[in-house]
Length: 86
Image 1 (cartoon, rainbow, N blue to C red):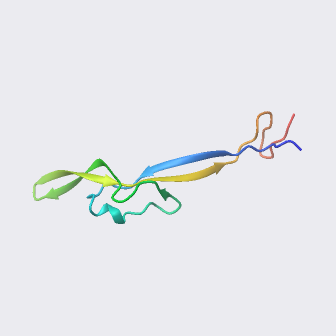
Image 2 (image 1 turned 90 degrees about the vertical axis):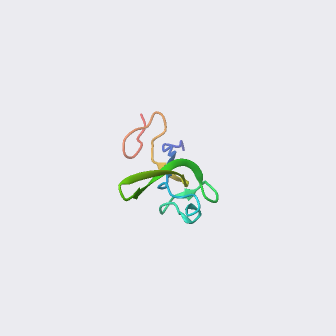
Image 3 (image 1 turned 135 degrees about the vertical axis):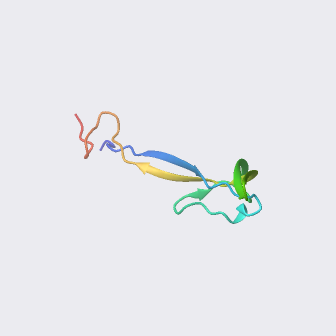
């Protein structure tokens, strides 16, 4: 019995909104995603605050998240919804 279906594993990455690093320790990833950063996350972004007539920009942090996802695919030489062979 040859294997006809060869599912592909996809890794979907995302980052949470930029926030003050001190607040970001509480930030969770969306449902289904796993947090791959620790503590306050990674200081790789800036967030903005409007103060009267000015917009101020501050260095901030965000969490990085991943989600593993299996995409059904046929093995080489098979095709169609039921992965039929030659």
